[in-house]
Image 1 (cartoon, rainbow, N blue to C red):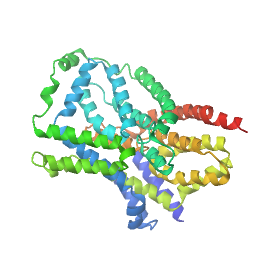
Image 2: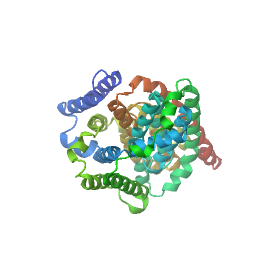
Image 3: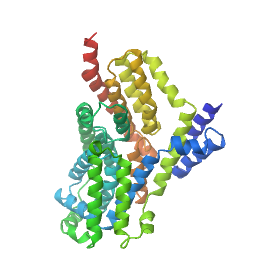
Length: 432
């Protein structure tokens, strides 16, 4: 009975989230409460096992850092300077946005990158009177694709890297980088062609842009240097994560607290907290609780066992099947809990005689990370950008996003299938 209740609550809540008739955070939290009322799990289970407080703390800390830095005007300075460098050309701006987001997501992580870059993008869009949707969509897709390339770029990769000791930062770049470049290039070419009619240069707006002085938007106060300094220290902490062995959440929380302490006289903590996207954070909490219900009744574990049963432990078939299952499941539930459930399953494959399961790790990483592009709740970066867009009165429709996300995921999985087969499975088959 419990599995039916948990799955029913998840499906009904998902339908309401898609419909967007009621606030999505409210629906997700209501689903979590229903799971508690039906005794699927207890508050203790939810708080200790299912709500990923590290992710919540990381998001909160980066929101604090961004909100304080935003007050200095440095984002406006970067936005105007960047837009002037491309002379206000909308397509060049789209290309530059995609590259900066993808590179930032690979070197930092995709959530941090979108939190830093989205405020800059909205400033440029308003100056040039451009439609926001093409740029928001580009940021989301570029962040997830770029984050796929490295160990720290996307939460699923971090989880896999922590579970498998021999998979280093360079291993991820070497094995996932080539296919990421192909998918990113194709996505960008398509967007430039598809949105070209919407992205028209407005001469008056461009003239106004070129006459602007970027430095005039920077607030002349110590808070500017404090914000930039702490932000750079935090980013350096992310980049040095493999060497310092300090988790990303600790680095982000440390940076947020340090910056609040330094800027308390100029900007009170109360005002900083008012700028935090609380609705986004509570949506994540509710989403983790909903997926936790599926974990509690064994639905995700059952899916993992089904994969083993379907493929009979055959490596080539398992790799391709895992890639597609990961890609599609990550569109429906957030990819973090799915990867958490799949890690012990892949480790168990070695007991079936698989000497080298590395192709399975790469299939899982590609499917989970790229599959997150399918829906607005498929990946953490999607939810964060959607929340920031809503705050700017530029909300993204769930169904409109789906129209672009699902085709991109299918294309990404097709390209990844060919890549996995050519690079890993043909050499494997030749050995037999």
